[in-house]
Length: 155
Length: 155
DNA sequence: TTGTTTGCAAACGCTTTGCATGGAC
DNA sequence: GTCCATGCAAAGCGTTTGCAAACAA
Image (tube, rainbow over all chains, first blue to last red):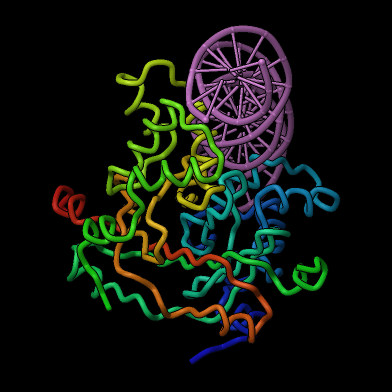
């Protein structure tokens, strides 16, 4: 299987805003207006914004929001397992609501991160039997130049 | 092919201290005592130390060394293509002298990073034809618990 | 001698924390 | 009414930078 439409993947696999909110309530978290806005912002977009990006996007329309709250909320969502943290750049974490294994295509020029397909070549049992390492999560990051940047810069 | 002895991989694939020094000279870089010490420290070990770890290890035996120099030297080595930067944790970059494609086994308990095997499932042409993304580098990071930590903590 | 590299210290950017206020339950 | 979440500001931490001194070539 090789699904090559990333928006389709997101629509099928990623939890919706309502599902995330429901999960938070189930876990005993309080659903504040700020958290609702952050979840809506994250669940609705196909890219993988950083905490700062989310803050900048939300600030004009969200009353009473500070950056620390964005960080705290994202941390909560990561703990809930509904959001994945991508340490793409040492100085800018990105967040992803797509829990299925996939390749992150990271553009080194514009910094965009998009999803692509799935990865099945590395199996937990293979690694465990070999070196005793218990795999919990697989991150595949493909660094390069995205189509848009390739078209813009003549390189 | 599946080479499962990571030390063997390092010995075969990773450039030696002398090779790295030679490469620096070839590129017109000056070989200072600090740079020599940093290269020796990095080339001789199978793990993937951070800049701070290198600094701490070298400080007792290296006269006149500061952390900025470690960062500068590592940056130079990355530019030369002889060292790879691994953004494993948002607040602690790791450096790797193994240029061949492989899986980084990252232990979420002790922070150790070891190499494992090779990865061939994702091909640049496949991605290029699909979404126009020009792949330059593939990073595969497997997060989990290493054998030593599994044995220590009863989990 | 020349120009790169170093040490030092300060700056920088992202992230976390402490505490009083505010709001969800 | 309780207690968790927020805002604010300051601190924390890794990393980078500016500049004069040191040193490889």
